[in-house]
Length: 319
Ligand code: SF4
Image 1 (tube, rainbow, N blue to C red):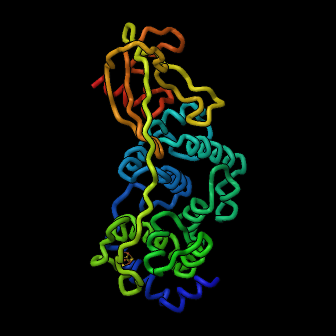
Image 2: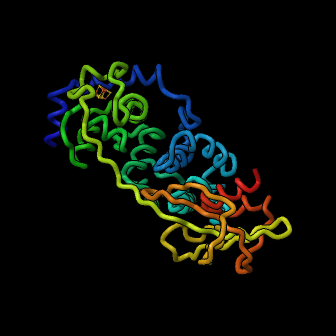
Image 3: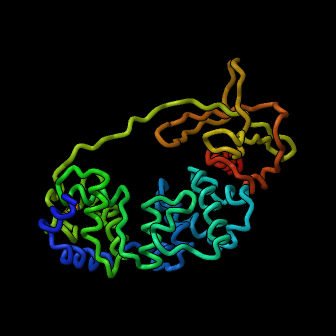
């Protein structure tokens, strides 16, 4: 608990949370899940927000909730339907786990209300469990995500370990307003204490901050480059799709265009860029004449669990 007591000595946690919460009430962004108290909807938003930008999630969240308004509706759905609704958000393991968690919640007869019990559900780790338990049920437990880590590092001026991040966040937490406090910390990291150059002049907790924007070394992830080639086979308004093997580690069971394997020189019909995790792909789409796969009416393709890249290519064809 060294870091936790250090932060108590360094800061007055109550004053800190008062400043933070006051700022949050007046400055929080209006997002579709803000003010939500339904644990299912909070869970959906939290899972979507992992690894996907808020601007993308905003629209997809509303559509997903319209399609699956309750945990029971999601539990009843077929996996392919859920994957199709998730298409474009990437990291499909999240959709599979969310679906499995919904089924588990329904089979248990209700939503677990503690962060500890929530972590027993498929795909729900410490962060998501704490976010749902604090926002939906008011459990006095802190969350630590990438934004919160950056805020804590800068406020303390220390290179905190994983354990110390959680201890420090819990030491600062306003227990009577844990849901708002957690959202305020994440919001601060997202819009004020941003990566690179933090906007310290507008920071509500600048008086508590040890670094106040002193530049830190940014560790940039090394990005890889690769080329992907696909065959576009179109016949009578239908397009040929193939399903990725269910055993594939990346996007198992999703639908995509068949790979283009010819070596002879050919001019691509389309070139585009696509990024997945740390790889930037140059994507080349060639006219193809294959038969293996499933012919799907172009206007019905969106009903399939398409990979994000396939969705992008088909959208380019239609536009
Ligand atoms: Fe971040 Fe600057 Fe606020 Fe410190 S003062 S928490 S560095 S925005």
